[in-house]
Length: 235
Ligand SMILES: Nc1nc2c(ncn2[C@@H]2O[C@H](COP(=O)(O)OP(=O)(O)OP(=O)(O)O)[C@@H](O)[C@H]2O)c(=O)[nH]1
Ligand SMILES: [Mg+2]
Image (cartoon, rainbow, N blue to C red; front, top):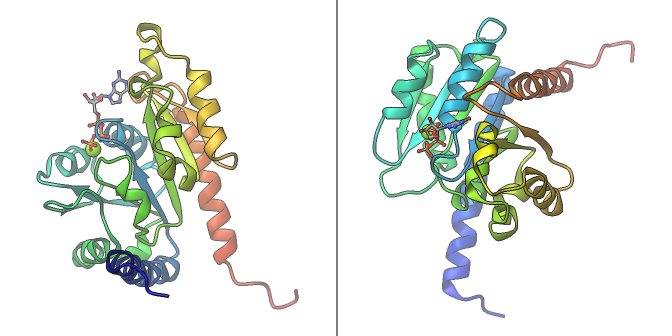
């Protein structure tokens, strides 16, 4: 049986990406850090959330960011201003980060610091609701944002990112009083495509929900570290 050429090319591309993603992940394991891939459609609030979360978590954790953007370094500059090391990755025409781009970002990061000193490596992906979810970069966990301004049907219309996510943040909830949208319907639709994801309602503007989100990160870090710990000799 012959597969259409475009299917074969697509599969090869994803297989090559997966190979590099696995390699990135081996580094993350060796460095004993938690890598989070933050994804959403353009403008759902990834950078705003990171500005708040980096500032709040900096006293507890050593962190760095790989910042994906198609053309500018604007988001990288915003996050550098928080005082955390940021490596911009400019993708040109690509609407997502892939594992090779992240490997390139890691090489640049290693010129600035020893990644083994980090607790958390954040990846802010390019704003796009479809493509980033198709390309693993070696992350341990995927975080998808959906802002209340996008409408409650998006998890059903664009299910891939929500299906893959470990945590879905419903963002900009401070705007709910001004919008004809029911946040419960958004959450129901997220749970319909992904019953296992943690769903948290947040506002980077008012700070609502951020303590719950930060508690989730702490919990994931503890889980990762306990998994990475060597088993005691007497067990
Ligand atoms: N009202 C309100 N506005 C927000 C909130 N979070 C972000 N915004 C606004 O939404 C716009 C986009 O926010 P960004 O943080 O740049 O979004 P992004 O997802 O990083 O955007 P891209 O990187 O371009 O995809 C900005 O004007 C923010 O001020 C929020 O919680 N509430
Ligand atoms: Mg951004």
